[in-house]
Image (tube, rainbow, N blue to C red):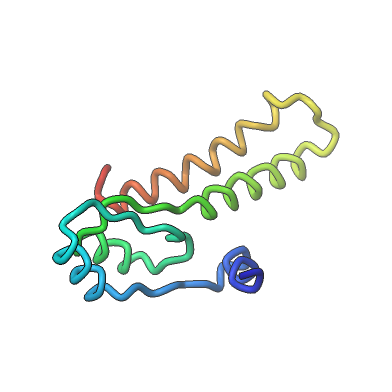
Length: 109
């Protein structure tokens, strides 16, 4: 798993989903379905998985990466800063950007 996470951090991972299998499971189960571990999944696969019946999509690692990168950027720009209210806007902005992009992709905005 460590290798997969490392390649995600470097932007090299693009997981693919078996959309036909998702549709089969949805048809057989007829219940809400959750995609766990969606971070790093190809954008088109997300859209197709939702059309095939995926109800909830988790992209927590993407949000964590955005938080980390936003914090690193803020500390680079303001290396001597210790006041959280001066550092955290970059973190919130980075996470918000990922959330907005995903909501658009998932057709919620």
